[in-house]
Length: 382
Image (tube, rainbow, N blue to C red; front, top):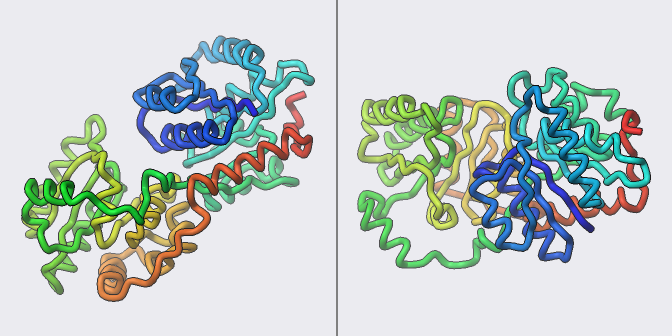
């Protein structure tokens, strides 16, 4: 099959990484992979692994949207793909508008997918958000997102609900059975000797309000009242304009007496090694959102993951693979108790059904059902 993915950009982010890994897997399986986006730092990796990238400014809506629709329609007519997979609200809107005016016998099948709750309105019926429902099939990255779509647009899913396909982990890169280099460990301990002999607790998240850093520090301070062998590691980007909040967290850690027991390491490219070396990874975002990437990657590396019940994809994945890590109450006491229990008596992790190969297989099966004529074209497209 010839498959075109359309997304805002190929800058680092969950949607771009999902598209990149999916494209790599498509090529491995002999399909033709094309990505249309506004570009970004991941384009070179995309091209390196055999996919084609075509640049089109689909990252933001403007008064020139109708021009983009015309350019996208011409591009799709030239490419003649079997499937157009639009990732996110605006790509869905542009793709639907472009495809609907292609003659019926030449239209590609449109699949839309939602990876997170759309910003600026959270599914309140804006044109781009509503376009998520216009695909012949709609993929949701979690059951929570699927339910949200069905509740917001019940008529669109009266006959066929969204297909839930969780983001798969590339276990070729995140291989829990492969040992961590002794050189890596030695280098880390040389840089941060305070980590020697400690149980590492990880919080990988963008350093921003609502991402759980403050709760993590409160939990760490409480755990240290009971045992002195734990060390906190906060990993993640500081977004533009976020320096003030980052300094606030560092000051808070010092006030809690944690300045010698927590490190803020920023964005890391060696997450596999951190997952493999940690005792627990946390996903404490306040709002249910995203693909559950941190939880899934940690569990794939056989590192217990702790997240909050109702947190979306992360809680769904942990519920299947490591129920001990799903915390019912969003309180410091609940997090402390769960963490101590895992440190003392971790239960087995069963990471099954959430690999990149699993998600690709399910997505390709959905594509094939459309190309065999089992799809249900959006009623208003013709």
